[in-house]
Length: 517
Image 1: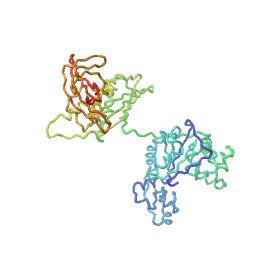
Image 2: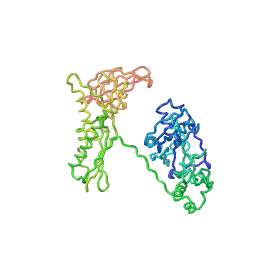
Image 3: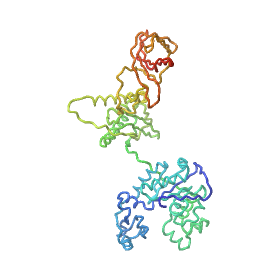
Image 4: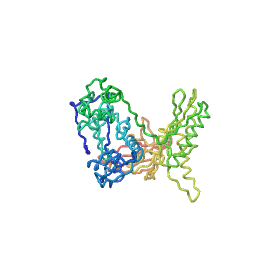
């Protein structure tokens, strides 16, 4: 299958039940060879093998697609390969290279399913139940897998079935069938060779001598006869492929990059011991992060008790931090909530979010600006840890004329804006949407003598303005605003504006937009 996926269904269209077990087998026919080409693009049109010493002879462990097309196969002695193809290049095989590569590819495949397992020496197994509908069905699901690996430079063959054994065999030996409908595993296996059952070489040789080159020659034979002739492992593999015997996979767990644990020689029950464990874990993780020039934005401290129960303490910071004392203070008021009960036997620390530390530079003169910024950020962290980060907001100027659009919420402590705050007077409390009010104006283009807001009449004693703010034509067309700062008889000050101007046709509207005190 060259960059194209041919799909064929044994029966008509169907929609598998998401609760049914479905497995996808991904086979890499040229796993190590494809990676070699990814590492060195000049080898794309070169015939080569990757060889390892076996019993004193160099044996091909991986073969490039070009060499495979010319008769070179894995397992051949390199000297024989050179006889067939004199210009063949030979590269040294690295131990565990298949496992390491499949592990990396498997963790990348977690985007397709949370359950991914390595299938040595050249494949992966994915549990697809409940996932394929996100792609619009199993056919589109497989197409996406093939296309993504093709763009990465890997040749793959894939198949989906209700059992791991059937999916494995279909991916490697079926010429055209790649999706097996539920409960049709036996029908799909009939034309395949016995090698599709993952059998040992001696058993395959025996089957070949007996003329059993397809599964339909023995699949309906009694199990007792098959066991006597070929052994228990043969029957187990057959039953696993047919779904008559269970088969389990060991899913890959993506490694947590910043995760450490601290086991205890004896169960811990005192508050002081818990504090010491927390300090030790934080100190270790901070030292590692400092070397990598990274800082903590969020972390979780977990205690594992003897009775199996876990307790977690979570903290977050506004900017990346490796300040041990500051992080300890964030945990400080939460430590009393931990109940050791019969004792804690393991402590763990997981940093769930990291960010690069802001670069610092030593000043030629003594200055406290950088220190003050860091202290302010740490103060905000301590406040947010008690009242909640959602209750602390910071606003920045935005490049808009309309006052309600001229500010935006900062997304982090390091967020900044190239815009400048307006030079004119602005209220302490700005309404998100101006409120229409009734006013009495003696002379056009003058501030009002009184206005009515929320059913109460306010008499204007003082007024300052106007400050004209034009409409932003790229948003919408409309009138300008003339803003006034006014004070009523009680001393309260308001920010009001007139929308438009007085003429023979239009009567402008007045709005209140903010409060100064």
